Length: 371
Image (cartoon, rainbow, N blue to C red):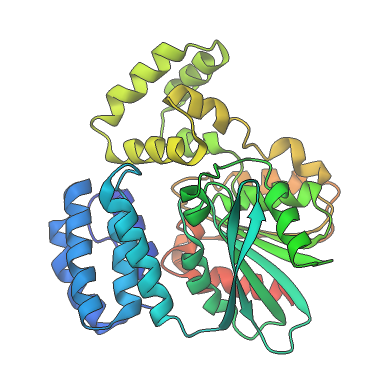
């Protein structure tokens, strides 16, 4: 169940995200959280608290716990912070030391001048294929861990870092909106003729975009829905402020927008992280350039091009996507096959972004849909 650990909404979401799946009832983690939470005041204290515990758990050979703490500690570190790569490497090293859910194979799929890392999770005797990927800030190892909810289904699961994600980003491959490109490359590499796909968080947009143009995908899951990047701002800003921002963007008022965002970013940790992470992911140099690139991520124009079966999941209190987008997206899928939409309310415990706190609710719907 989603828990409120601190007053900061973003801190709460991330704590739940990192520990609430397989570690929520772990007694070591429960004790650690009691020590970590009081220390969380800002980005630097966030890093210190999680990193200190991560090193302790690594010494204890608690690989899975250490990996989770390392990932948490890296969350607010900027890409040019020398600690960032060190912590990322520690996160992945400990993750694979502790991973036992699936037999797996690792690949480097050639892409542009580098590669996309792929982990194939093997289900003996499986006859179907599933692509599973995240969105704005997750790493494929987080998706590999999350795939434990899908053990036993008749699918081999291909988890990967796409452009702008994890190792691919660190290799210089920036985030793109036309996600059919990496999907097609991966399908070609493994000679897959038909596959289903699950996109998590921003992946809820990316998977729909891919389905619109890559017809080897037969079933697609938006876990959760993601209508547009601008929604993540719209849900946080008063109506008049958002209207003003959109007008400034339309009139290309670059200096005005940059000044406004830089001023607020100095005092707003959440916005500072979102904008800086966005610029890192996309290669944008200023908040204005980032917002202009964000405008490409809009699901409305491509909905009529989707003719696959679609599962749309949404949380009533999602921090990034208004739940009112759910019927709007469903109604726009005029050429899709089966369309199923599910809204998780607060009473269910699945009302947060990607059902953080009750992740199993989302995966039960996914498994039923893929069956």
